[in-house]
Image 1 (tube, protein in one colour):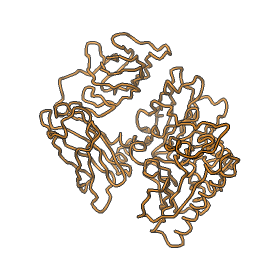
Image 2 (cartoon, helix red, strand yellow):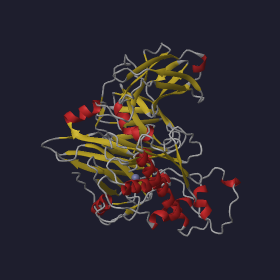
Image 3 (cartoon, rainbow, N blue to C red):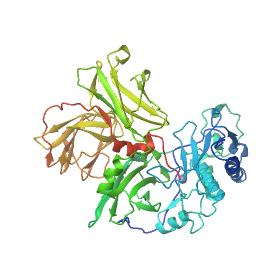
Image 4 (cartoon, rainbow, N blue to C red):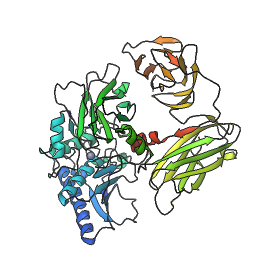
Length: 572
Ligand SMILES: [Zn+2]
């Protein structure tokens, strides 16, 4: 059970778009599922061809002015074929669920090149595979999920209890009803692309002979409404107590419009959806309190949010709900979503870095990890292949002494394993590593603390034991917003924020500080050099730490960022 303290005065429909747009008349390449039987292969590829044709018809006959701008094609290809002229590929697998989203039966993933639709087949009738295909193709046009904040109505649509008003109602494993492309879906696509149809976002648009249009409607570009959205921790259930947690977030100053709600959809581990409507504060901050008890479904919960019809798929995240023992067990167990990656230096004088990590799910056939290093000039300066040990661990050493490493700045270490990747940064000055943490992290005491900043960078942090404060040295040319949550083991009782020595108050204006528990949101003016966070306690600072942990992408970070930075973005 999730109990929520949010007033629910009127039902609101949210039909956001995702951050993907077609840039050409699309060709859907249906990849022949060669490991299925001959008749299954024919059935599935035919279903996909028909789904493309169904969308093609729906758009062509919707009354659009220039039908030729809305044409789409499909073709069947073999898995080994060149995909250069494919806009979207369509794959079939028996199951497509992951550990975190075991109920997934379809995906659209724009991180692949070309973007990929993945459809499950196991225990699914042809009609249901057709539903999934129509829905995932809808995502490939840029459509998000059609939801209402009336949880009951939403559930009825998703489970098929009531006819769904849109093909983009979230697809669920329990819905056995036939779903259709609805007028609202077609209209939404027309609204996204405008009269130039699928050519609207084409980079070569100006070279195309365009039909004269009397009343062009401009395409809508994707807007990313959120600065951040997160949950503090995984949720540990207790037998005799409720567990309180909350999702917090911040709407970008530029996108904020007073009085409009944020719609947050939580898919619980049992496949049931909860939709919540929250009115943000006047500074665009919002929080959704959540209560859990011993009967709350255990497992991963996925969170998506939209604001004024806009979503940012890179902000989607999951969190784990379980009893203590299980949480640690699950954390240790293999996941299919990635691997950890670290870049360490043994000590400061040694111009050598150790790149290491651990794969959660080993691919058979001894596939190595490929590591590449990009210099601050964005050129490839090193490549290495590392064998993965039986326990999933891998490690290699690289010297930073060579000529290719002579530039000061950020070096990005990318690792690729199968079709997943991960990356981490190190900072070099005079061939030696200087910054202890990767990008968007700052070393506070002995911890690499993540932060979020809209313009500028946090260069370093020092602990001021006299004032129980943390001083963040920042480099910002423009106005920006900083969000940081120092861990409570380092600082407690935060009550005041200073910008360049002057206290900032929460007056709702841009240059203000919002303090919520240990989370601090500060709007600062361009040119700011120091932000000081004052609390009632700060950990005593004792010298530099012996072992320098340089840039750590730890397991929990991988888990949370897996959907955006790794490869899997669920769209089911
Ligand atoms: Zn979907």
